[in-house]
Image (tube, rainbow, N blue to C red; front, side, top):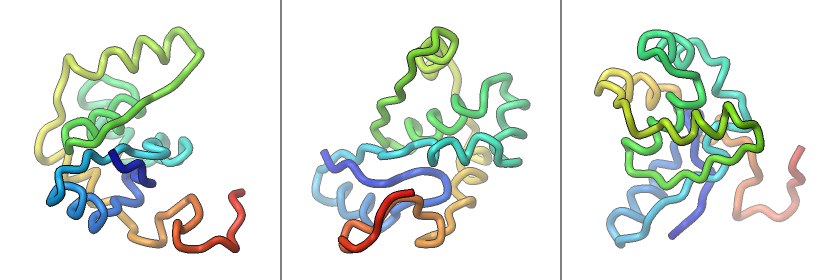
Length: 121
């Protein structure tokens, strides 16, 4: 298991590919981009089309790509939403639409793991 920053704005493609080649599961750190992905127009459009919340759409995107996610919440409604990630699927077009949001390094919200001089906001 390798936990790395991974969300629609930062796909971390090279690390995911390395992990896949070496039989290492990839766990998404900050899978919702600290909530920033929830207001994205692509996410909200897909959520409306499939009748789900934006968070469910992003978490399902991770699951269908093979990422490990551990969504957390203390809110009963969100806990139920997190439980209801396995009774729907996103289309290939929806998966591609979410993946197209990747901004590379510009999408990173956490510190670069090779840099020790950066502080999280």
